Image 1 (tube, helix red, strand yellow):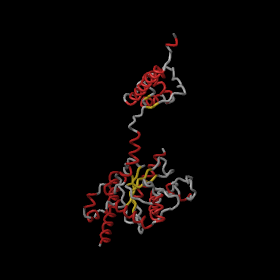
Image 2: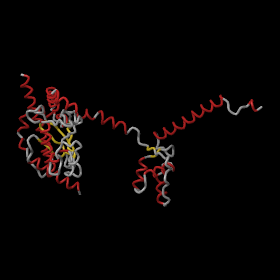
Image 3: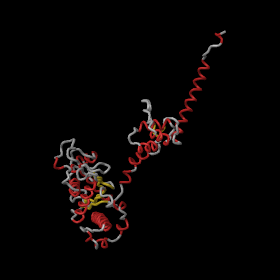
Image 4: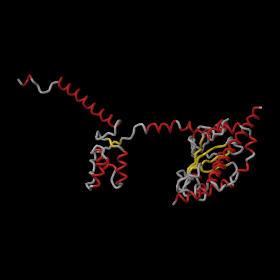
Length: 167
Length: 190
């Protein structure tokens, strides 16, 4: 039962994202036979070192979506960012279920709740690319570089962006 | 007289030690080869997990440990264990010392772990052009793909059509970004 609710909701979100796509975002299920596995493309935000880049990510939804949030992981590598684990997994508050904050720095309103959506996640990730959250970094190395050697960080990001586009 | 024939002397002790060493070694080697090769019928403590699973599916109320114990004692016969359960004799509780060794194919575990650890990042570190098979389209002139842009923000009632539209939007997004980046690179180079 729960999974049909999830499927309907995901289908609805897919339809909204297709008919009214937010700027710089493309997302949908890899195959409609499995509504719980999506791929998304996000454009790098302007006036950041990610500008001009396109980043692919996979979204895996739990069976009890939208009660629990999906997980999101960049694929194809190349997202050198304090809040993205070296394996590509994205770590931001909107992907954390309420009550699951060991660090107590996130407001409940920032975290996942059924009134959030895939679109909001992707928009949050876009702004995360522009403004890393320095608290509890997922990629310590990237966080350190971002904090202490900003020019080097930005150059690395630009190189990865080009590499991601096959250039 | 008895002084001349001691029941135990050093050479005989040594011989005994050497002989027993070889006997024990042979015994354990035999167990190992049985576990690796055949399904370890009745040899050692080896139980085939597939057989345990088979019985556990038929009789979910039974503990896996009891099933393993019975299988091990009857030499890995599913039929014998099943019959024993069906005739109402039930399974014996194994002694606490019983440590079932499950004959998991030894090749399975380490390679998957190392593979995901070592090769996954490499497989991931692939650019979007090769990921979505866009190398042919990336070479073609941009004007061609621009003509079909209206496919943006459409929704079809047909599942395949929807899939196609999504794929096209995705490809267009990547190719457009690539073209833009190439132009920018050219500009920077000059």
